[in-house]
Length: 597
Image (cartoon, rainbow, N blue to C red; front, side):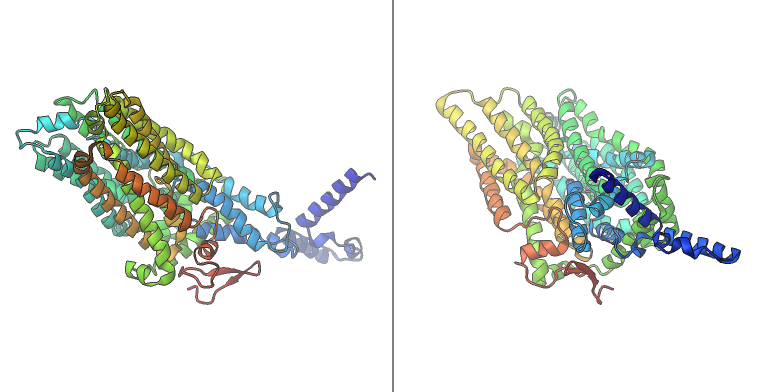
């Protein structure tokens, strides 16, 4: 027998042993001799039961479901841009720790078993309908972020007699949207837990429709500001509800993809508002422009018949049977009962841990929670103080004051690059780590701000036309933001914390994000007036500081377990910042801590 046939023979024997371990011994042929009919039937039943036992019964084969449970419990129940690559790498991390005595490597049998179990969960028709319905809220958030940008001059002129809209009043109208977002993101979590995800999304869509119609018919500065505040409340609630709901209905391997769709829907909404700004940038066309968002919110309300309640929320209410039925609908008939049960169990365990939710004061006082909390807050501040929303709030007016011949074109190009860069960022986040992209993004934004400043200063000084260099600087600035400082702070903040602390930490960081966005929207017109051509130099300084902070302070979190992230932050010192660290890796095996529950 040649070498190839020997390998095939050994592989065939191995498969037979795994399929029927009890009946594969050398004594099986002699055992049936002189056996009664009843004993023979019992023997056959024993063989069948043995063959049906889980793979854990074969001592030489570890149970790949153990790390799969860890993955389901460890991946945040949020749809976050860039989470897909984290899940794939995390599966290898857990399998490496769990299968310490087996073959390791890229082509490991158990790595592939875990990957297959995760990756086979895909999109179903019902899941697609639900996702499409919910993403109407994300489109509305982006649309209302930028809708006042292009028609600024027309709206201010239309409202001059009610009374005159000066720069500060206009800054209030624009930025008060963020105050509403802060209020909405603060009240949304208790409402989501009380009334459920589906009911909240329905009522929020109705509320947003009424607020948008009120905005469209506003006759004065005060009424327009109030309408923007109410719209901000609804959009703030959406920024909490949409990624949470998508993360709770999605299979673990699709949470990153749905997070990308959520981000993509936002930037498409921004671009849509910018494109429609010119054809509807007249009086009374601007009122139609401000009311168009009601189409998306109405569509969301009408499509709510396809939205199902979150299975995780049902588990939190003790309705495990109903949760399992909805999971079966969302996952499709091909989903195995065992994997469904594992998902329900992971939801139950995480919900039990989240009931021990801690306060912000604990995050600040606990020395091992303070550092990741400060990192999350700092990244949110850097994200907004990089000045990106100044582009989406005021780019048309900025380009006009800079003397660019077609400000509308510059604004639409910035929105287009924002969409394209968001799409390319998915590939970058799959290939590179969080930390590397943060550094690249911060350095790129610093250079882009310097290029923009040089063009604005050197053009008049040298009496040459550098308008297209200004546009190039803005486009680079937007692109580099979407590669790193845009999506990564949210991903890192979710990955830095365990289930007990995550909700509190992300809620506090979200509040800081809204406040920083409000300050940028409120102060940018005054800063632009005071600094003129040097307006973007403060943003360049902030992004430069962000690059050093990201390089020296921020840990790499992609594909790492919570303990590995802690080891990088604290130099491998023992202890755990997470209150939910029920399982630890000791000598390559899993050991359960006694104080888990």
